[in-house]
Image (cartoon, rainbow, N blue to C red; front, side, top):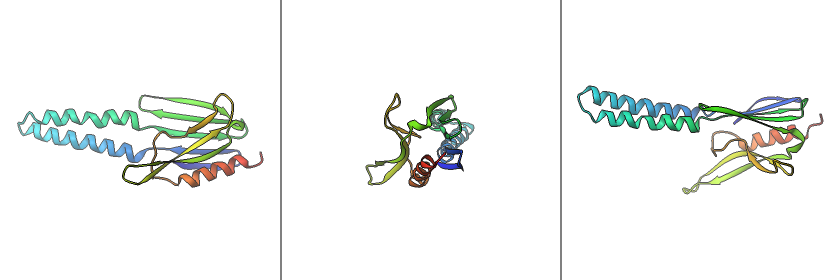
Length: 157
């Protein structure tokens, strides 16, 4: 995630999963290329590799999820847009419903820690903690992003 706009009237935080998307496309190209090469050499085993190349393509539909959080002070809204290859969604909240941003941590079996930024809604229909992205990662400054959101939320209108 990264902050793409930080103005007194507007804060935009985005997550564009380029690394995951490129890795999955690379996996597809690798398996498809190997399968095609084997198939062209006269071995039917190449069809198995070509069929296996569909796995990264299917994963791409689920894991290539762009998220954009727009904090709009003049409208008094928080708009969260999510887009995948299958479609998208837009969720709107009143800005005053957001208490603050926090960083959630997940500990891996190997002892590592990954993070994600979440928003705290203390009351109302959306009460609870809502992550901005569904996956945890180590690719950005999560604490810095949460601090930026919190500082923006406490600024006087």
